[in-house]
Image (cartoon, rainbow, N blue to C red):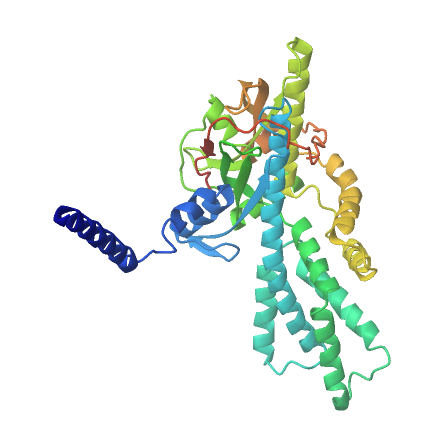
Length: 440
């Protein structure tokens, strides 16, 4: 009996001790969250982390080795599962969309700068700015430098000025008592979503010289969609190269000596270099390299011929995109049309479709002289294992000078349809692809 009582007391003591330990144990609600968040990060987050690690900032001017560099991350998802044969075609569209996403994000920031400068100029034009003549002139110079896109700023300012004039048609703008009314109309225009969208659209379609400086791609095990991200980067030199590319200008532009150009690309290098990238050779000459792929549909020579033709069209189309050859919207008429479309209540996607339609013919007529072939062959994606033809097209100021003036046809018109991938098998294993840096 004594032994039994002793055993019961020992058991009670044990449970009391365990309970006391549990009560004194602090549970950290944040434990493991960092790992959980990191696991959910994709290519877009890696792009932004890369910028942060470099000590750079998106959108604004960064001083990198004595050069002014602007950059933005863009993202997209590949709309077709890796198990599908047309995965590579959808991948191409996804990278194009990622570049456009970076362009859109950049233009949204840039439009704010333009908007501020236009308001300042309107205040000056209507006699509301009390700055000295020197200060006003400095503002004009700064605004022009910040928005160098075929005098985009001046044309947008003229559009805004005409709109305010219409609103003040029955107001004597020279009378002091109407100063407040003038300021109100300027503010109303500047703060309107119509004018803001017009500036954003105009900024986006007049941007050139954006290269795919670095790319990230991720296909996660268990997921049904691969994700991609592009770090789009622009320098003043790239802007000048873009103008020379389209206008066939002869300019003397060299950078620091780089390394000899690769002429034999591995499958990984092909997949990691989609789009237009800048490389400097050992003499400091700038080269634009445009890499593209196209799936071989059947096991025949004809199918291979079609695939290489499509890859060339896509690569050359990317060069025109870099040059800004899809743009005809640097005229006052087109800017006015964009403004009126938004004013009538049209949505952004509707306006964008109209812009694309009106600029398509201009793009198709644009010829770029001096494009040569650096490498071509057969490749495949590790998540897809379907054969494709690839091509690396090259352009430089020297090749343009030596060109005979060949006219290249327009690029492919692939559209990334919202394919239903819900019934497709998930990715079988993790795949992550990260490109090397380009030059600038």
